[in-house]
Length: 175
Image 1 (cartoon, rainbow, N blue to C red):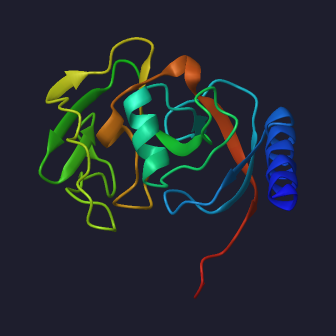
Image 2: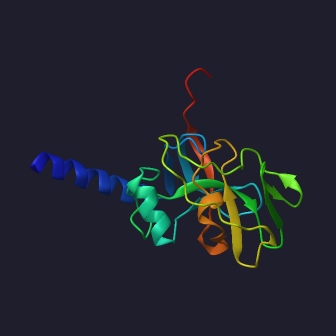
């Protein structure tokens, strides 16, 4: 029991240090796996960003289903790494093929009904056709059709986005 507690304490301490020094680890398929660091400047369209989920229901779902692991976000989870797909003032349209931003379809943005283990996904946020309001952004994966992103939890506050840049990426098997 002591060994398990010590290992857990060391892991939490390491995650805390990573967070303090602006480092983020991505182990999901939504973005290239590897190590990222916070970058200066305000996020712009298509920038890579780190964002902590603020909605308790979606954060609980992400933890329960292992979409996210425990981490240093205020909700106790690791941050998501996504791309800024839409900014305030952009026009969003959701159709059968996915999400179009200002008339251009975002790659692999069609919401899926079930995750890779067959569990039902939350109903996609019904944007219909709307303009992104001030202070909010749309964050999406452009690599993984089943990415847990704004398709499911909706728009996120711009103030919660932190621009990141890759430090070390792990090439997928076969590349």
